[in-house]
Image 1 (cartoon, rainbow over the protein chains, first blue to last red):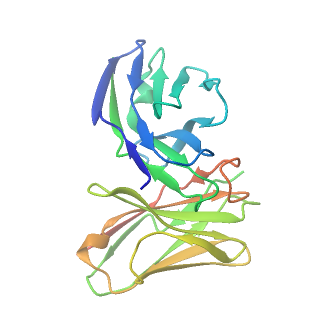
Image 2 (cartoon, chains in turn green, cyan):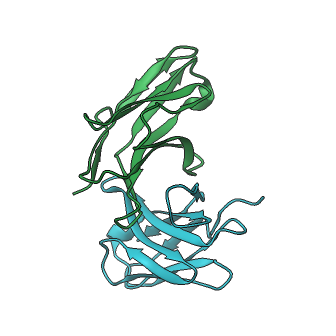
Image 3 (tube, each protein chain N blue to C red):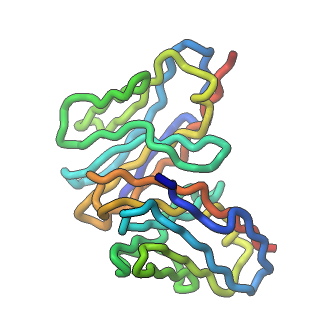
Length: 115
Length: 114
């Protein structure tokens, strides 16, 4: 079974500080893609960052970076210099192109940013 | 470029009725996927369409169906609504049905079954 585990239902961070959201996943496939999505109250899922499993280098997008540990099947998201606009629900997910291609999502982490 | 448009934004239906939700993808996107989001089950895959063909279907009963038109717009239909069908239904579009291509989500349709 394809599963994604986000063990932190809620997290909070002080504005301008750094926070790390955890994610582990389980798949026996070797070719897959990992994602972090953000869902603010507007409900739209917004892509934060994406990582191809075959790439060893961790992806980075401005203040967002990941720590991808393939052997441990871990994919954590680090948000640096947190801003009020980062407050949202964050979902970890992956897709496997050869077996259906759908997103498998975790249960989400609600991030609060404290001014 | 306009984003993914889902209509209606909110919907209230009575148990036993049927409902049709619409998703207009970004221009040029031919792949459309649907997801159901509930507090209890989280985000679950419903189906994916590409060029009017259903490529994949999630583990949902036959009451859930969908289709895609030649202009790539997609609809999903739920018949004989149950209280448990209350959820946020999200659609996402992409140029191609492969993770190499970015998927853009709409803001969803909030369905309430009473």
